[in-house]
Length: 367
Image (tube, rainbow, N blue to C red):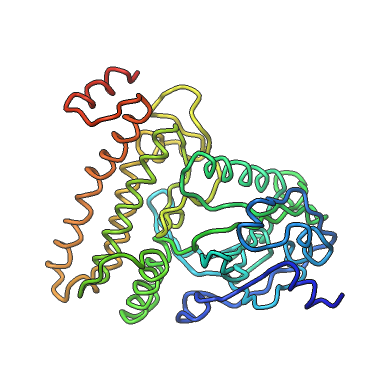
């Protein structure tokens, strides 16, 4: 069997729209090959839904692709550029250890990113080695799939591949690469980067791209930036309510970890509360509790305000009017979030119909 035949049997079907965006948004970057890749876990159900043959993925050729040693036909590997407010401070970031292979178009016509996390150094690595350890990659696999099972929008995990090479942290750890599947990797930080490094035209291109990819059914107006902001606010309000309803603490709600698709992304120091405590944190560096459980809705609103700031030049030619439009949209987040949360609590309590006293009942049941 030839290499092309093997790839055809796997079922790759790439169509890479992000690689057609202005080049300031990414750098073409191949994954760095690893020594002796071995599949540790493969999500066969997800593979099938993507149009991929799970058994073919387990072959030597399939394993090589999941490790970055061999590129699938049609792949356009790249590292994305983005910025991010990390614990309130803006930094220039980018994919420091991840390579986007491309966008798989599924049998159902869905477009999803296929990204290798831990695939080696990129121009955005900032001194890092570009690699990942096996333990954290398995943890992301487990938690992301658990979130999916709970009905919470999330990136997915297709596979974890051991690299056969150690990564040097406080001690040597076995290396691994996670294949992450996402509706896209467009983040609030992507918009922050383009606002700072690009032109108004670049920003407009990104707005139109994101609307077309994630909100094709949204009613179009003569102000697409406002439409996008409104849609993202709705989707993030729904997502945050779902987090709060299951006691999920993300841990690193930086703006580079808020997606425009409304998916949960980046499972670092995250966990679920064992007992209700709004001050719960799981990140060892979050000493001030910025990203504590009880703060998550407020941080989401703060992040969305940062998105709105990037869109000001497109919202209105007059800066005061642009700020007014942005503030009006952001102001709606709190009520939207509360309504999504209350609907979820009604479902938990078995309340079939909406009632005026529902909120009082929910509060009475809370610690």
